[in-house]
Structures are given as structure tokens and as C-alpha cells.
Length: 177
Image (cartoon, rainbow, N blue to C red; front, side, top):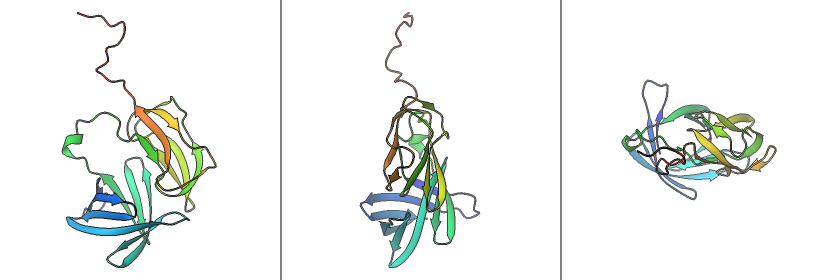
């Protein structure tokens, strides 16, 4: 995933190259960095880079990823890659918890049609409410959580399927010429 810092004069690009267990390899403004991420039970994580440790927290809000590193906050937006510009299908098939927390509200049910940016679930983590939204038009396939449930970082909250049926299947009753 490639991200660009939004709203600042000097833009910063962050690309996640690999993530396996607690190990993370990223490229920040062209410089490759290895790091370790240790999730915290109370939410957030500790990020260790070159012997320095940073307390971090993150949340996704519509098309922006909010990241707090110690007292500083950053807003990132996903950088579209060339091959994805013409892509109109499902962006994210699963909505996952960006950090450990409590499910406050589930705003959809299986079978619901949702639009890009539509709120799906509200989490509470670190005394903050975070609303997670659909990244593209979709159908709610499965709701895996309920209000009041505690969830871990990365837990699947909602599964989605594409909004439009596959164009390769002919519609029944359509006239043939």
C-alpha cells in the first residue's frame, strides 16, 4: 500500500513493502526502513525503528488514514497506482479493526447495499470513536460482530461482496439479437 501525507506543503510518501507478524518493512520518501510493531492491550502499538520507540495509534476515516505518533498526528491518503485507475469493483472485501477496541454500533445488516463512504460500524478505542466506512459500493455479505463486543487489531468486522453482479453472466429474460 502506498500513502501520501495530505494537507501539508511538503508531501511525505509512505509505502508498506512487507508486513509479517510484528516485522514491518516500509519505504518513507524513498528510504527503506525496517521496523517492529508491538500491539498494546489498551489499543495502539509501539513502533520500534533504529532503536527508537514510538507510541502509535491509527484509524481509517472514509478515504483518509489518521495516524498519531506520540503527540504528532498525520493524515494520509492512498496513492492510486496506474493499474488501479480503471478499477471499479470492490476495493476492500473486509472491514477490519484498525486497533483493539469495543464495537459501539453496527450500522448495517447482511444483504444491505452500501455506497462508497457509507458508515458501517463505530468502534471505541483509546477513548475515541472511530467510524469505519465502505471504500466502494458493495453488498454486506456478513456482519461478524455485534454492539458491545471487544475486538483485537485486525479482527474482521464486516465482509463485503461486489455491488454489481459479474457482467459475464447474461441476465435472464434479456432479448438476444
